[in-house]
Each structure stands twice: as structure tokens, then as C-alpha cells.
Length: 91
Image (cartoon, rainbow, N blue to C red; front, side):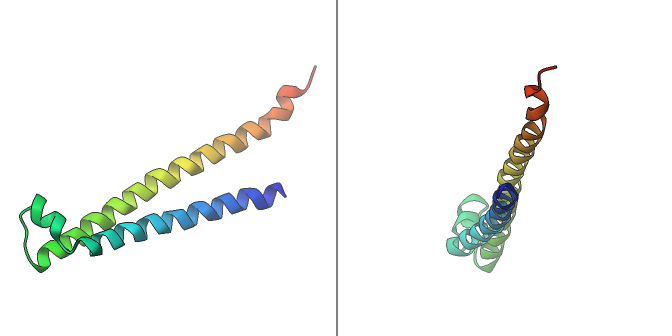
């Protein structure tokens, strides 16, 4: 059962990683260049391409940070759980 739970958390992290990146891509498409038009002064198709690139990169960075933190915390938890029986043993 423990094996199934640990692997389901890992699968959840992989799905979340892809979902965050897809969310960044969708946000870049949804803006239709308004962000780049206001912030960078770009217009037309160039602003749409810039929005797509900016939000895709931001989604990738956010996904890497969030999911990397989750995986790190899961590894710390697993390491602590592996060492608990040694700490409970009375010598």
C-alpha cells in the first residue's frame, strides 16, 4: 500500500508539472499580445508571439520550482521515515 501511495504522489507531481506549463501556454494565448503591448510596447503578431514565449517560459519556471519543491519535500519525508526505526530502537 505504501508503494502505491508514494507512486501516486509522484504521478500527481508529473501531471501537475505538465498542467502548470499548459496553463502558462494557455495564458499566453489568451492574452493575445496585450501584456507585451502594454509592457514592451510591441504591436501586432510580434506581441502575440512575445506573450506566448513569455508565459510559456514563466509556466516552465513556475512548474520547475513548485514541483521541484514538492519532490524535495517527499524525498526528505521518505528519508526521515527510513531513519525512524533506527531512532526508536533502544540500545
